[in-house]
Length: 373
Ligand code: FES
Image (cartoon, rainbow, N blue to C red; front, side, top):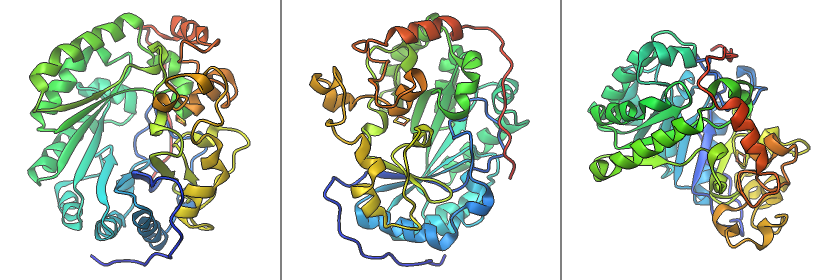
């Protein structure tokens, strides 16, 4: 496996280094998921960064102090240079994780990726039942393929996370998701409630569970935790629309993570491009460390100075960091507003209205994505 470039030297930033980079290698994806959180306008293959530029970005990330790189998409395995990028990240000292739908993988390629240094694979599962998984992904035959690939991941000695993407049609099978993760010898399960950004917002009326479904899931997960201790790490948070306190989205804007899009724009979160009037610098024009420390987009909501009341004087402000800017935008029309998930927001009642109309068990037809390889 060859290296493919060296880093440019830049001054270290005055802010704390990010923990991880989400490297969105491509927006191309064979799945057509109704819950896709990628932006409505996707980068075409012709605008994707080339191998040498990604290698430079990985070096710059390592120089900046980043510890982990999450290779993601779209479907990152659609990139033929993935092995080369994993090898380069590993040589640069980064922990390499692959976030994948798994449907394009086979054992031989996984072996090559492992040999290149891949340490962890996170596979997204749409359901535990094949035909129901297809209903969400719009991709025939995906579920058995995912199970097969997941087996190979652990057989080949890599760590596995089952990413259980939970919504109204599968939320009552949370026990089955946990059992599936145990059968697959996963070390971790992420019970990821669908978030309504990007494409998913179009399908909110067909995806959002009811409050009763949510309460049942919560009871089941909590009941299983004692038996799972030491066997399976469970990452689980109450979905925003039924919560009273906002999540610290991305661990706080510009605090822990950065996201590089297929065409090289550097974002504080994967949905940040939905915020109107915000400009994002590109790795093709500016060093990563400079963007992280100084770019207008990262400064915009970093820390607490930007916060409106009541966030600014709230005792939770350095815990939730004001919640999610993209959600404040999606729900109130302005990303500067208090995240209405917080029950101290005077707009918190909005959520009750949305869950009353969209939270149901009805069969609502999906609008599927279509973005070919
Ligand atoms: Fe953008 Fe939460 S998704 S801040």
